[in-house]
Length: 87
Image (cartoon, rainbow, N blue to C red; front, side, top):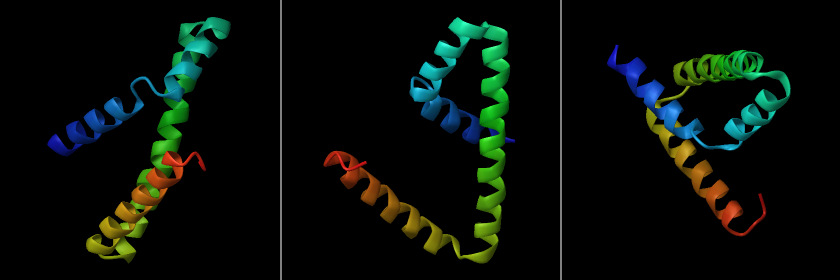
């Protein structure tokens, strides 16, 4: 059960104040908070379902060490590209 809490906290902190929240605020101003909330919940749930499904499949196919190294390399690449304004 603590794993679920870890994932919740990580997703909550990652999403807090990002562009998704700004878009949800904009939709709420146009469509009302209930419709915006439900749309945001379903959209985020679907995206996370896809991520969890693919993550499980990749985890079954590759050793965890390779996944960690590949993720680290991708974060570095994206960080450098963002730093130089190329992304």
